[in-house]
Amino acid sequence: MNILQTCYSPAWGGMELQALEVCRRLLRRGQRVTLSCPPGTRIANEAGRHNIPLLTFAVHGYFHPITAIRLARELRRRTIDIIHCQHSRDIATVVPAMLLSGKRRPILLSKGVGSYINKKDFLHRLTHRYINRILAISDVIHRNILETLPVSPERVLTLHDSIDTTRFSPEHARGDAVRREFGFSNTVLLIGFVGRYSPGKGHEELLRAAAILKPRFPDVRYLVVGEASYGEGRYEADIKRLAVELGVNDVVTFAGFRNDIPDVMAACTAFAFPSHAEAFGVVLVEALAMGLPVVSTNCDGVLDIMVDGETGLMVPPKNPEELARGLGCLLEDPALRTRLGKAGRARALEMFDEEKLTDRLEQIYRDVLAEQRF
Image 1: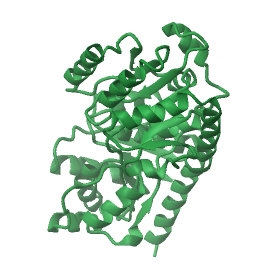
Image 2: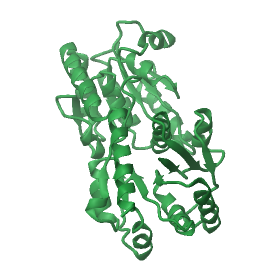
Image 3: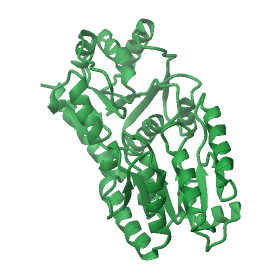
Image 4: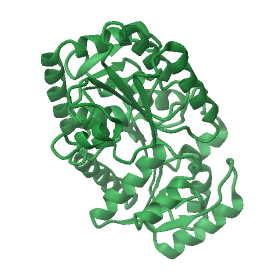
């Protein structure tokens, strides 16, 4: 199949990373894939680094008649079979381009973010009639799509984000190297956290939980991994200042951005996922795949991933006391950590392995192509 993946987002986060990973997986399977994205963005740079064919357009806002004309020319020239949009706003460019190209092609849209407004207006009815499938990242997003978009239920499917369970495996990671780098002994209990500095990721709750736990577990350490997104540098500074104010800056290490997340997770004893709300939570799946016992909030798309008491412990969001209670249970019970870690790894292999979910994505492509022929 000749597949055009689009992601006209200028940011860099979970959606952009997943778009990149989908391209890489399909290329490895012998599909012909081109990624269309804005020039000079992080996703464009990363795609170039991984030798993913690129088609760049500077896309801002919603309405892009000139870009649609240029994209239509490329659709004719490249004989594209399927268009898969990874960003909702792409539809406003892709649908006109497909119509201008003179040939109907299946269009798929992946949705990882819910909407708080009803989008069943004339413009959305006009564009969404040309979308063959909408792929929801989780069940909560699936329900949101049916509530807010003008699409029939049979055109909406749930397809979770997936991970490389071979890369994210406790057998292949080198946690000892990370511990040496930061000066943690092999015996110290280490709580891990991975996430960008953005309100709602739960940094405050983790630091407050650390302050609650410190008198009881003075030797426990916390490793916070991630960087600020564009425009969120002040929030990062506020979080580091809060660590000082709470008196936990001596037990919390801020590691910044890391490319070796499997090794980071392998260094940890347990993992904290205190997000206020998540459409899904890829980093949570990665932690499960690494065999880490997890304390997670019980919000939104997390419910697709976690089984409370089986793969980890679930607590209410925005509640540092409950987060501290859950982490304390893991810290004092090695047998519980082992049991939860094994069950989490098994669930990641069963439900979120990239090979299984890429099989399903390719079958969806084949299904919509078959429909298009009739």
